[in-house]
Image (cartoon, rainbow, N blue to C red; front, side):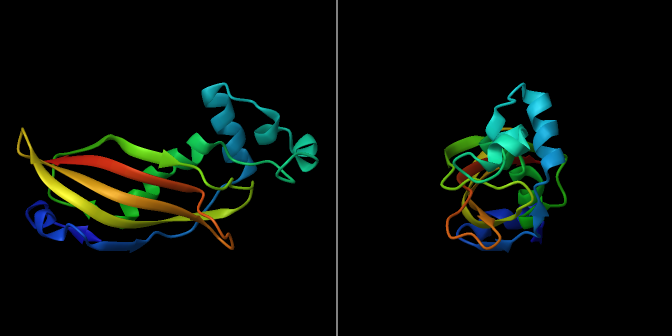
Length: 149
């Protein structure tokens, strides 16, 4: 959804729909492991992971969380601002692992909008990361973002 800054206040409670699907490749998982120094075998050792609890390698939970950034920007794009800030998260859970090669997407609702100092608006969004064909979400998070004119 593309909106203007002045229209954000009236959108609290709005269903933002779903993003496009994004594939979580093994290469992306390995790159994330290198960036974070988290080389646990369930993520990066493909052969060993086949005999592990998930039947194959899985994405790091924090990789899934970090992918909310591009998925979120597909759900809400505020076009007449000078600055966009990821302010934080109120709650995060990882109900199901994301298998290597799976496709994920985000579904969101704009939970709240409030004014903040500096001619800004703080937006709270309830986000769910779905796994294609999955029965449980990969991630459930309440994201807080700020937009400034």
